[in-house]
Length: 159
Image 1 (cartoon, one colour):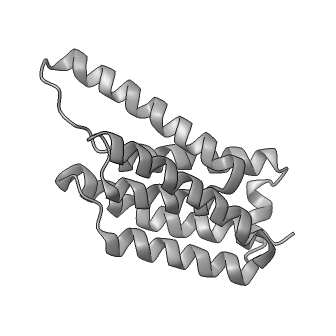
Image 2 (image 1 turned 120 degrees about the horizontal axis):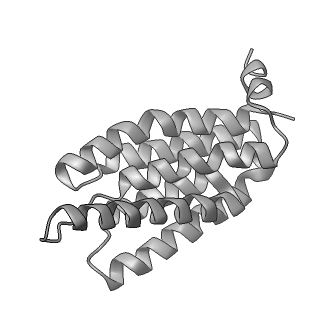
């Protein structure tokens, strides 16, 4: 099994998600240059290392994009940066991982919103990218374990 098709997209996502999260916290915006670059780098790696899995990961990406687009279009809660970032996460996690990542992110954001509402009376918007990143960081290792891939196997296969 080619473990690079699992690990390299996650490492790239890790490298992009930290600056995306920090920028979203500070400015409430996700720069297109970061999310689109991350998407295309992960796409190329998936295409090179395991082209047979690309349709499944693209379907997960399209699902996440469409779901977040509908939410953003219907509410003011999400911006289009979150929509594009969700598409990146779909490309990282695939199916059913995208469901686990989005559910985890939503629960984490809800808990944070509840905690913040206890601390102050006014309702401030909270950036969602950090929660999307955290949900993905929790979901991907879970997916590795469900697939029977041990972390040591993944890291050793890079050398």
